[in-house]
Amino acid sequence: MKHKGHYGYYSGNSKFSHAHTKVTSSNYDATKKDDEAHMKYLKEDILYDDKHGHSDEKMTADEKHISRLAGDLKYDEKKH
Image (cartoon, helix red, strand yellow):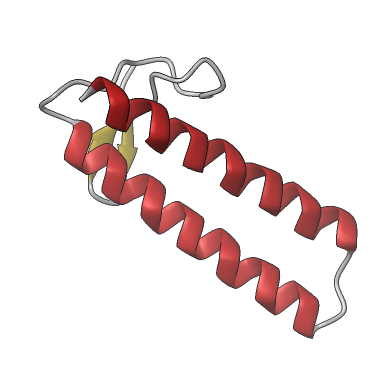
């Protein structure tokens, strides 16, 4: 099952990925751009939450999500 991201159809190959399709040479660039955009959004969300006094629990969840996405990117980069 392919997922539509900001930059095309993508997935993750990492065992920690929540996607169900594989990254291939044809969708690697879209996957990378989408994961980078997702991480950027999460970082902005953390800064917003911090500035507006939102929960540490939510910010920690966002940080963990960023770590998983970064792991996916690192794994995919080795494969492609």
